Image (tube, rainbow, N blue to C red; front, side):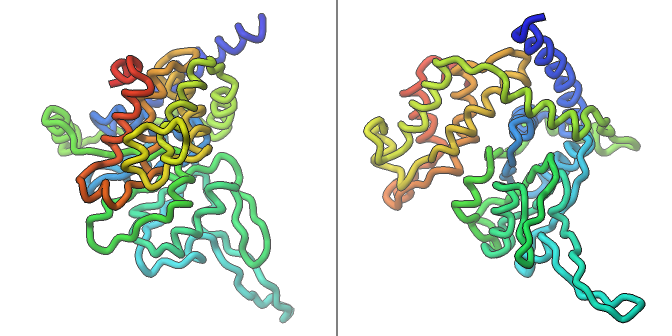
Length: 337
């Protein structure tokens, strides 16, 4: 069997397994298929996801369900204004042995896990939020001058309530850039909410089933990186990202007028990975330009900022991204809609 045939066979097998995983998650997290798809795409790409939505929309249940389905050891941190970095990373304590000798022992914090749920991350101070920066990017933490690696896989799924609510802090831009995607969790439709009522208020509720193991997830992440990406898709990614940078010659007029800054190279890297994962989740062997259009908003929206004048005019990042996508990618935007 040739290398190409082997790759196709592996992708087919993984696609079937991912179908089981999605079905298991959707049994508990009802009617939010796009949210599930984006979160799984982030995990298959080896990255982190920021789930943004009002309280009570099931963000916490989604993360808990994913931990079970993907076979990962989870931990949860409830972010509060008085949370300190040591509460996340861990700390050294001085212990006295039976013979009277003293030595420091490191007590691992909850970040030493495989799937970390950072609940209501924007309720902690920027200092505490920044404690996650090194862990999210380098998969290690530094405590008391020692580098302590976090074993693979390691994913952060953070939930965030809208900034307009009282008692919240905006996330630092450097930390936002570490999230592969921002997933907006909206209110369900009337039909979906009816299904939720019927499924969750009875004697029994649906249980999530384990489909993957940590080792299988690592293998899936490696396979995603082996998937081929056509030159047309690569050029579409570059065209889109550079069109959103107000200082670039390729920038669209709306970007120059309304954006204070645009996405950096990490956004292009995120698109290269997530378009492959989306294609895999949808049973395809390679990504298309339509995947780039579909993932533009989740990948770019938290890596851009409006100017003061644009905010005063009532413009939104979602509208600007949609316009740029339509101008740059054309028909692919209509297919992804």
